Length: 235
Figure (cartoon, rainbow, N blue to C red):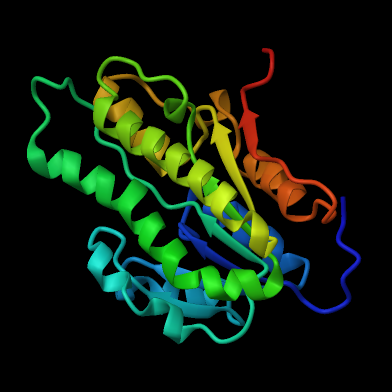
């Protein structure tokens, strides 16, 4: 469903350096929309500037949620979309996971999206826009060795559900997207931790998930998609 708006829409994304976030940013760029990209590392600015020359680039370390305080003041005007696509994963049994491994995943996957959402809500409200949380199948079902990651993603679902109810009066739509295993650097890392060979062609492609997110973003204002699961097709 393609938007009929004539002016360029404006989207703020995390995780545009790779995977689903990168694929979505490329599609939004190619159709002429305006981008605001949040980078965890200032050293990535030149890399992303080369591929997204017209984008606004902001630096905020998702591993340090406190660095996001005040970032809303660096953004001018309305945001049609806020997409949380960044994430990290470290597998391990509960009996072995160390505090820093728990803390890192909770900070990047849950606390930082909460802080960033709070900071940017005034801009999303101006546009009566959409907040998208790229969650995971692990946000619906937890499995052995995935406790910290699944806990952060279950928390992200709770954050989205609460936000949806709170922001309805402001016309803000909130969607959680739950991709299955997707070919990305994160998936490659998961396979390494699992001790398995990695074949990118065996999993959902990032562009496929990006297309599903675009459908959410382009949905007419008379409807919303609260939750969207994307699973591998039959083989």
